[in-house]
Length: 422
Ligand code: SF4
Image (cartoon, rainbow, N blue to C red; front, side):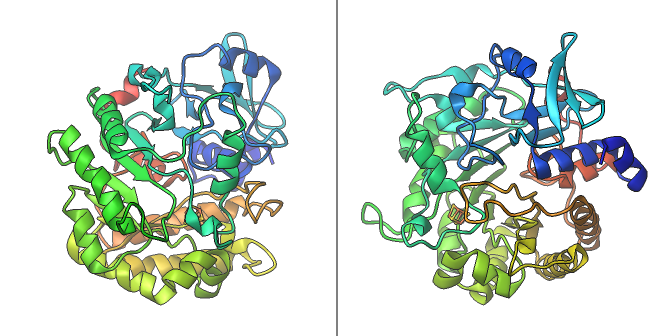
């Protein structure tokens, strides 16, 4: 369906939300003309994110496909998910990049110039963007370990391609990251965040199931956050780290490093589907215990300081998932209601069907599912009084869902100094 037709179906949804959701859900192709020009740009290119987030052959960094697409009319950003078979594509004509649907040009887009720090190369040849990347306009995301040990036990989450992505990165000509030291992660944050305009930093990593360097997973990660804290002169930055659900004593250890929030991602709400789609998380922690730990963690980080991401759409994967999108939305919103009533902030995200994940070949969830889910999410956030804007996300850096875009269009987000920089 064309974007124009979607606007008629959803007259009360801002067109930029329709464009972004469709581009995340189905990916975008790049015309040859667009590829010829993106190759010459100084922007952050795809290839160093911890997952491929592509729906076709994963993009190599050397292909020079921009990492993030911005709508020209209001700077709405989204993560580039390449799919040459998508009905949506980017073309370059008359000196402009345009987002097209199957029938017509829809909106002008642009690619943010790379900040100076992104060009830094460490002494051993590791490029800065293999350590820390810019997200949207005003956030960063660093990856400590590009591998997840659930892949060793064949218990990886079914939608995840982290292990396959790392293997393919090793075949590229540029250095493949694997695991960074605390010193390198801390230096990278100090260099990136000293530039004005950054408001949040995020750190993620694959899971560690056994002791490492004689330390538990939590102890091992805490070393990184103490190193970052020192590099940032003890200033408490709005920050988030993603880790599996931990018991209360370990949450306290993470809190003491200066982190302001944790993402302990359930990925799927429905208990049966959680067990099927996240077998490693189900075996090592379990659905009930995960929720208990989320609630206990709120006692330490406070309301809104504990987040849980959901890979929305995977609960419609077959043969086990919901067939009716309304049932899938209902399931999610009942979970969001329960979590929010205990101070936990769920996060939505638009599932991309990565071919090298176990769910490769599945159909993406329909647009109506995401529209109804985001509407319901917003109502629940209002009902439970979660603050706007959030400390770790805003319209300028939300690239995998539209939650903060809804905030923005309803006038709830604060002006961001970086949004006028083009
Ligand atoms: S916990 Fe699941 S989603 Fe996260 S990296 Fe491991 S396998 Fe992938």
